[in-house]
Image 1 (cartoon, rainbow, N blue to C red):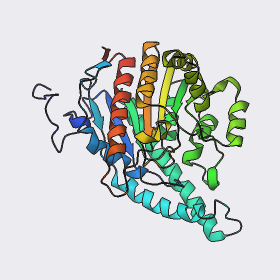
Image 2: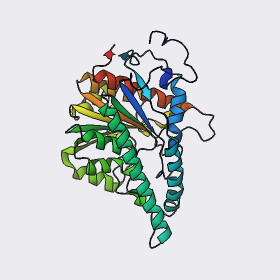
Image 3: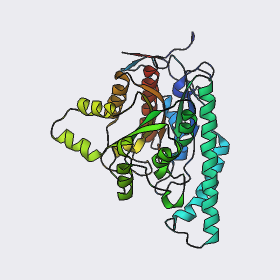
Image 4: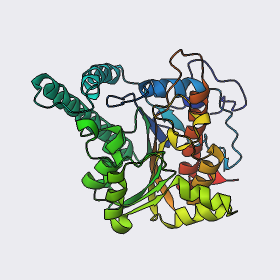
Length: 349
């Protein structure tokens, strides 16, 4: 740190955000998961970690909310080539199932393809569990960078073995409460249902910004009683239309959370002008400033952010439009900053 100048341009081979830290000296460790096997509409999320890493070196480190959040150390592990190869195989198999809408009937070949995708997805879940466990065992804060939104399940499993209960703050355009969507047990569209079903330590799920939902999902959310609270986009818009300030709405959302929180952030929870290349963009959603203010209110309330995941950032197919990666890198930096501040490792300005 003695020779590091936070105001200088980042070196081409520097770490995430142009930082010089190694993993051992970093308080927060980012685990990249380039996985999007079950994506059924737009693709590209598997390239999200690499695109965000490149864009992160253009992010200015001075923060107007959290005082020097880079100082405790941020480190991103190398993007694993073996997972990229695994993703390519799983995605090719999954596309055959997606082409028939998951209705495989008695087709033995499609059954084999579906079964293998489910098996490979569970391998990824275990991989994330192992990596997040190693971060937690080292006394560091874990962050998961997808990839599609299926990837944080392993992180929640790892956290649940160490923390008796926690809540999940979920920012998204979708509820992600589908039951094995298109037959895929670990679909990106099923991640929160899988979390509720498989991780009893998740005692509260607070969902924000949902606007493209299935009837069965709404019914399932309602069946969970107080365990699930949904702030649909239409409710947020109505409150805005009648003049209710965002500060009041954000505090209402935060009041629904327990004291310890994991943040799961699908970039399509934002207005799609901020993430036009994400897999399933939906009109409406939050401004980045609104999401940032909400995270700040979580911290200002005295709650602890145990870790987070950021998903569904997809660069443009032609590789020339870096807008999604730029927004994703800034969302990642703010998530890091607020998480560190919530754990007393960085100070609020």
